[in-house]
Image 1: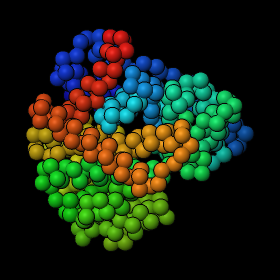
Image 2: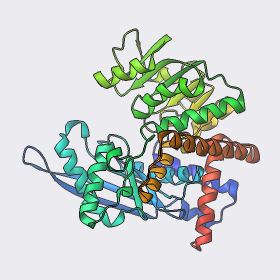
Image 3: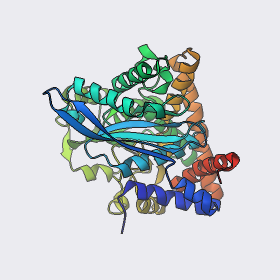
Image 4: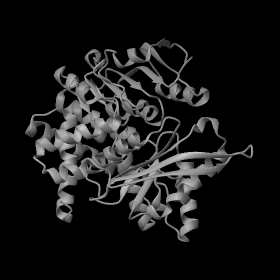
Amino acid sequence: MESYNSFSVARQQINEAAKILNLDKATLELLITPQLETNFTLPVNMDNGDVKIFQAYRIQYNYARGPAKGGIRFHPDETVDTIRALACWMTWKTAVVDLPLGGGKGGIKCDPKSMSERELERLSRAYVRAISPLLGVDIDIPAPDVYTNPQTMAWMMDEWERIHWKHSPGVFTDKPQQIGGTEGRRDATARGGVITVREACKVWGFDPTKEYAIQGFGNAGQRAALLHKEILGGGKLVAVSDSRGAIYNKDGFDPLELVQHKLKTGSVLKFPGSKIIPHDDLLELDVEVLYPAALENAITSANAGKIKARIVCELANGPTTPEADLILYDNGIHVIPDILGSAGGVTVSYFEMVQDKYTYFWDEEVVHQRLDKKLTQAYHRVQEAIREKNVHPRLAAMVVGVARVAEACKLRGWV
C-alpha cells in the first residue's frame, strides 16, 4: 500500500540510498531522525480583539555540514510530519549542490488568506520571539515558503534584531533588497530548475522547443513559465494549474500575459482562449517537459503510468512518491528530483547570506552566473551517480547528498 505520509516517503528514500552506500546502522539511525525539533504555541491578538492560539514548528534536521537552512510556511493543513519531511529534503538539497549548510524547516498551522496584514505581522513576530535563541547566521537561517514572502522575512528579521540588539540581516534570507536581500532571488528556484532541464536536453537529446506544462502557478511556476523560453530558446506552454483549477490551450499561452492575469485575478481560470481541464489531466498531457510546482504527492502509483512527459522537473518539494519514481524510471521518463531541480532557491539564499556577511552585493548577472555554475555542476554529478550506481535519478541524487552528509557526520566523530 503506497504511503502518502511525507516523512515516511523521505525515510524510505534515505534507506534506499543507505543500502547503495553500505552505511552502518548508527549512521542510518542518525540520518533518519531530526536532530532538533521544536513544537510550540503562539498566542496572537487578532484585529477583532480576540486572542487566537496557533500551533507552530521549527525542525533542524541535520547540521553536520553547516547551520540549518530552510523555509517557514503558513498553511492551514500543516503537520509536524510534513515539516520533518521538508527539513529532511533540505538537508540533501543543500548537500547535492554542495553548500556549507544543513537542513531545516518551519511552519505555522494557520489560514493566511483569512488574516489581515497586521495579524500576519503579529504572527510572524510571535514566531521569532518564541524561538529566537535557536535562530542565527551560525545556527539556523529561515526563508519564505508556502504563503510567506519577503515581507514576512522583513518582519521576522526585525524582531530578531530587536531581541538581540544587533544588526544581522543574514539570519533570514529572501528579504527585500532594501534591507539586505540579493539580486536574482525572486526567480532563483525556477531558474535553477530550467538550467537543469537545459543540461538534461544536452545529455539525453530532449527537445526544449516543444510543449511544456506547469502544475502549480505560484512564484516558482510563474517564473518557470517566463524563463523556459529565455534559457532553453523556445517551447510552447500549453497547460497550467493552480489551487482553483487547470487550463489548456493546444496552441499555447503567452507566459507573460498569463502571469499578469494570475497576479490580477488571483487565478489562472478565465484566461482568454483557455479550456478548463481536470487537474489530473494536466499531469498526463503529451508534453516534452512537465514542471510539478505545487505540493507533495502529486505523482503517485495511481497516475505515474499515465505520465507522458519526457522530462519531469520537480520545482515542488516531494511531488513524486517512491513507487511512482520506479514507474517513471521504467517508462523511460527522466526525472530531475526536487533536491536538485528546486535547489536554485537555497543556492541564491546562500549567496544572500554571503553578501550580507560582507555587506557587499553582487550584480544580478553575477548571481545568475554563479547559480548556473552550481546547478550545472550538481546536475552532472548526479548523472555520474546514475551511471556509477545504475539507479534512477532521485536515488542517484539521494546517494550524492546522503554520502556528503554521512561523511561530515563521521568526520565530526558523531558516528
